[in-house]
Image (tube, rainbow, N blue to C red; front, top):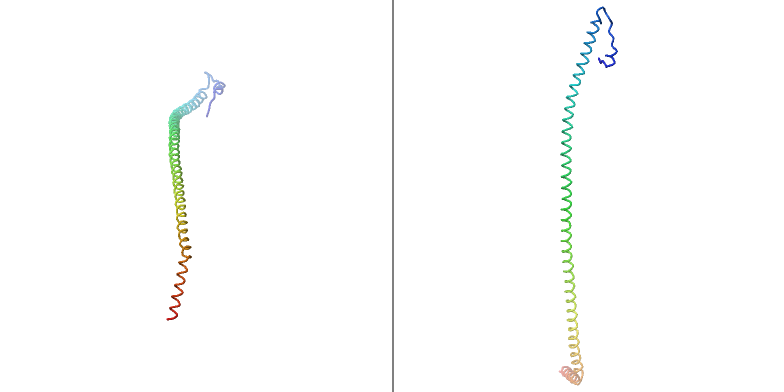
Length: 168
């Protein structure tokens, strides 16, 4: 049962000979005691609940602070990792450029070497052609010389030899 302030102020007891009816007053006092007792119990329970909730809030605040600190340190680590990764990436890129430049330079050197070898081979071919032409020319001269009077003598001797072979 609940009793409000208005109920208390408006409560009227019946009158008896020497004042109010003691039974009604006693009964009302019991009801009030019950209401006040349950209110006190409820208040005590609510105070315990408040303390429990305050501890929970305190714990949650500590967790929140810990999480915030963790987030801040994690963010700092991520930022540091990004910076470190950026530096490492730049070093890798620089190293790759150096290697690429060295490979290009090596390629240029090889091309220059091949051009020199080609030129050397062209000179050798020209020299070989000149020598071959000279050799062919000297052989042609020898052939032309052999077509002269000696050829006629050789042919005459060969025909005599054939004749002798037939006669035999």
